[in-house]
Image (cartoon, rainbow, N blue to C red; front, side, top):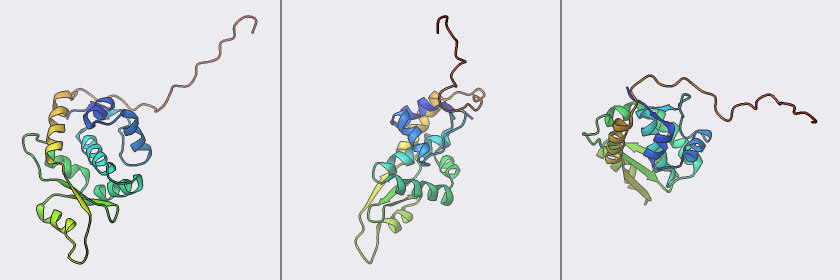
Length: 167
């Protein structure tokens, strides 16, 4: 299984790396400890980017947790693994309820968009082609050797203070 560096992931998802890192600190995505990102990280980041474009941080966080519970990102990765097959995956953003749902069939989209009792403001973002394009880039950029070991985040500690003469 291949992997890419976090900087490559940020470029693939078309967000600054600092944005991707802030998504981790806000618990929107789960970064790899080693910095080696898999297809799961790509799928998660693309869903997050699409939802975040229309919803607040809290609504996006809650939606991402719901996606992990309901579908599991592994199921989505299995659907989009082959870039030659464009999977039916739509993200339906319900602006009235500040929520989003990942739909894997047309029937699910209709259920999310149509409310027979009242009007509903929804946005439907088809993700299948975007996932297929991202998987093509991932396959072209992927490293196939062992992943780097886990590393500590942040700057390394300062070296011991060296006293100079006269100081």
